Length: 193
Image (cartoon, rainbow, N blue to C red; front, side, top):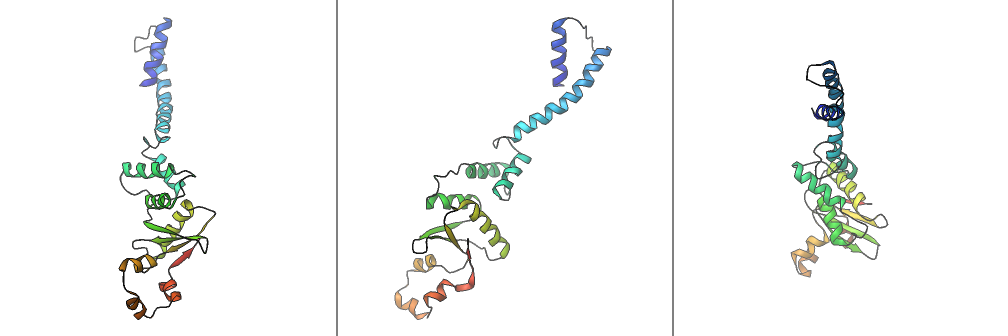
């Protein structure tokens, strides 16, 4: 008992009580100590949960709720994600920094700037076909993309980046008989924010 040892040492120093271990004063100190130890343990847990490096329960969960991410992985992986997201500053609005932030939050993507429309084009990589994962991706994008810019999230299996990477000749692409508009609206899987 932490509190009992502390109280006993302080009372022994003033030499008013003998404290043999079985006196009424000893029993009263034990009763006080049992209540104080509960408070001490709660404060110790609060202190541990207040810092990401030592949090292991509600401290991690509260931060994950704050960042609106799901706590997946081991405790160390969860801590690493929270630390990376917490390190994002207002100076981190380069394309590479935004891609890193989205990736840490679970959205693997490539970002391009569309200067003509004054918006960001976010090509969401991976399998994000169902509506629930698209809504989760949209939530992450709303948190980490700059508020002053509109963005397009592209969940389609075809995108301009995919087309460019194929390095097909113009004749091959033209032979598919797609108009610019049909490529832009292919699969109707674009979300605007």
